[in-house]
Length: 312
Image (cartoon, rainbow, N blue to C red; front, side):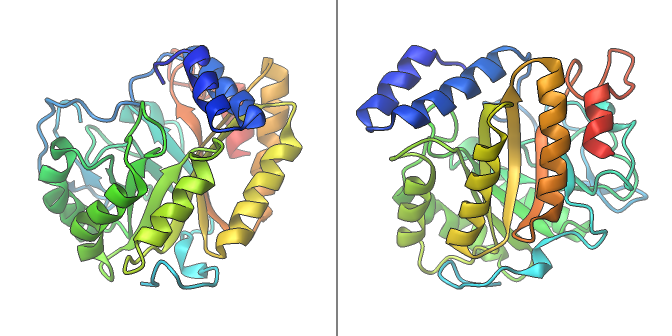
């Protein structure tokens, strides 16, 4: 995220949420401590190509940059992976996934529609429609269908539409875009709703509630969320995720989570959270932010101690 904590804090103060301002400030500190390129989505100049099948049946790309209604209730056991492994990877560089195996992770995504290189065998790539920009919508139908044809069972949508430095969409705008670009795939794949932040109103759940209200004819099989805070605030994460799953009464994917703190604090936090997320029935999938050098992999491509904790 490329923004200052001052700007974020002021916007959240205006929304009347001092507590959530602290949470978003933690996101800022965490993201600024890492070097990555994913947050703005794939390059506006990338050339999308039709995915081709690999031996594992997952879609690949040579690109240089790479059925319940929204109002239905009940957590769907069909919105988890057949392997029983909920753990996934968020990545920019597919080569950094090579040291992981399908016994450790079951899925991966890169905030885009295609990827270059190879993923571990039997690890499913899940494409995302990052926003309603023409950059993404113009290639979505082709790339989403190609991914489905090659074995993908899920399609993801809109990255942090409640945040103005990300997809930056109003709930009404997102609902309209959903009906045009996501809804045609209902029944062909399970559809993952917009991935919201854990910010305070009008962000986070307030944004999602408004989206659901505007999207009464939408088929949303899974709700997605991101959550960041301090590694010492583990109880907050667990309560927030539990409450989220209970409130929406549908399978939840935590497609980004991370924490600020010392190396030892973060490692302890991650180990505890993996056990918690694996054990919470309402969570169908989750992905640590993110698979990059200095986080889950070392310079030589080997797994860091944090990664070993993640996949233990």
